[in-house]
Length: 234
Ligand SMILES: O=C(CO)[C@@H](O)[C@H](O)COP(=O)(O)O
Ligand SMILES: [Fe+2]
Image (tube, rainbow, N blue to C red; front, side, top):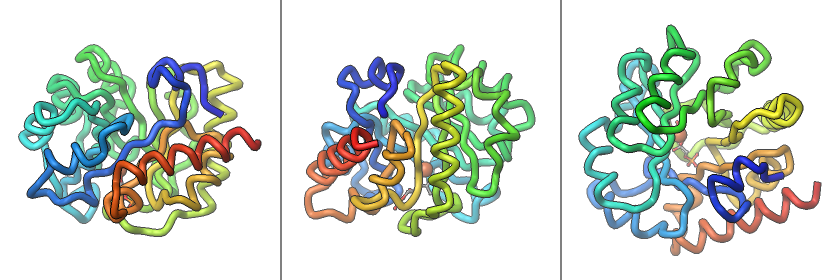
């Protein structure tokens, strides 16, 4: 169920795949980006050890990675105080900058700051965070990241109960004629991507399913094809 907006972003209308470098070798990030050539976005999990109990990377690494790859960066900020810390990722040239509503004091203003710095703005929801409570924010955002695991770590199992939230997000976008990509993150693999795609997601983050594969670029192609097939059968 790829939307016109997703089509405008990809040029092809195919489901978008965003490999997560959380599952890559951090000592070889440029090579690991090259290994997923053909991906729509490269997903970069920024964790601060406060909002989530894990610590990854920040502005200096993103700054280097932007120079090391042509793949647009999809920065997922799992950090406290995104109102202060999110706009710099947009200023660096990230394509999409997503922050968590649970951590933001003023999500509207932060989305506007990200967009005026030239990036798309993304709103992320943890699994227990209600979509219905935040519907009024969606017009401010370009992407909605539905977390299908608890944020913090790769390699966790997809929470099936989130399929209903993906479907609700799809309905909200379509009925409101919103210019918003529905993105799914956590536990996405060859099997779970079908349920997420059938529920109406446009963009799929996959870490271990891509970087755990013998041929990561081929894993990206296969995931895209599985999503495309599942989306057209609904
Ligand atoms: O944001 C996160 C985890 O907090 C994700 O982006 C993970 O990096 C996805 O990894 P897999 O679940 O696909 O292994
Ligand atoms: Fe993520």
